[in-house]
Length: 180
Length: 180
DNA sequence: TCTAATTTTCAGAAATTACTGAAAATTGTA
DNA sequence: TACAATTTTCAGTAATTTCTGAAAATTAGA
Image (cartoon, rainbow over all chains, first blue to last red; front, side):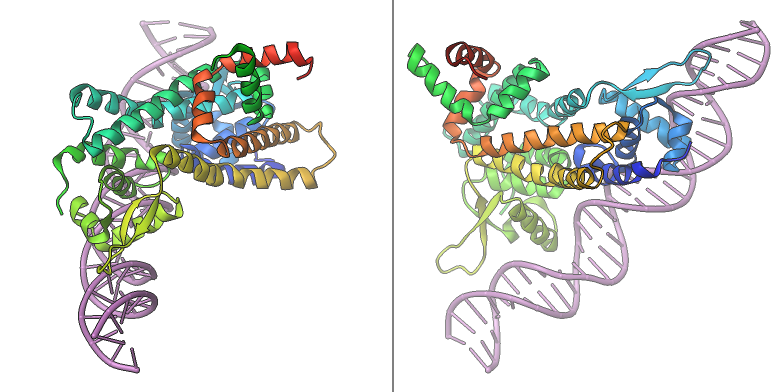
């Protein structure tokens, strides 16, 4: 199977962006062909479409599965594994954010939690103040994201469209409930 | 100036996380020493503390300045440039998000906008539907982030603490105003 | 303007990351 | 179980990224 001409732009672009998004060029390109192709694809098809080795495709598929961005699909009477996106575009985007939080925030949060355990006390040392601040920030972000991640796509869209307008709603709530 | 022992953990960790956060190991380490040291530091001090070349420090400082994470500071009677964080921890975090949006979202959004210009019409082609979906998602994220980014740290903290509890406030609003 | 202090640049070297392809392992069917 | 189809692994190689250090450029004071 040959790469359809209309996909080339996206494959090239996803390849270039791949490393910024947390994987590498080939993995980005693989994600592009899988997302923009209606039919599930098998490893040989992907290798041909991108002109890369079979081994590379195998590693890339493992990576995309570890990100939970693709899913195996089997065709009756065919032993090959076929791959398709693990959800809607919206779900894939949330999944990327989720994995990145795990890889980019969790390790630091663990370290800082540990530091605050052992360093309890001299909260006046400059560095320890920064540790506390970064810890609090990441902890807040973490619970916020957990919370957000559980919302339905629809609620989330509504919320995002409201944007900072939420501030006004919050003010309103305060006036009504008298709390914050 | 030698690297204080209590900073070593953070320098090593920020180095390891650096590439996941969008820069490289040395730049991550440089950010760590600058953030965790009370006094502004000059390039030679940083080079000594991290045992890296002067040229490397120069490049790293440029990178951190392009991210707007550090700022020059001058001492009277001293021609050297000293560097300190460009803001509070909270501001630095927002700045990282802001720069990453610019590097990780904007290029794709530009491409997709262009595609939708030229491809206007056959919205039934599978790939074009995906293009539209990704475009709408990124566009929504973009305006949401712009909005959020303008809020004061305090409002933002309040909003994050509320988390998905915002959903309930929104429901309340709908009941009251009869709109969404 | 001249000079010394300081910073930046960048070619080459070092380190890291990614890729290939053939061999090994696994899987499903008969 | 035996075998062919398929996938995974991984040593060696290729490509990319990062780093060094000396030379070039810039800057500020005399």
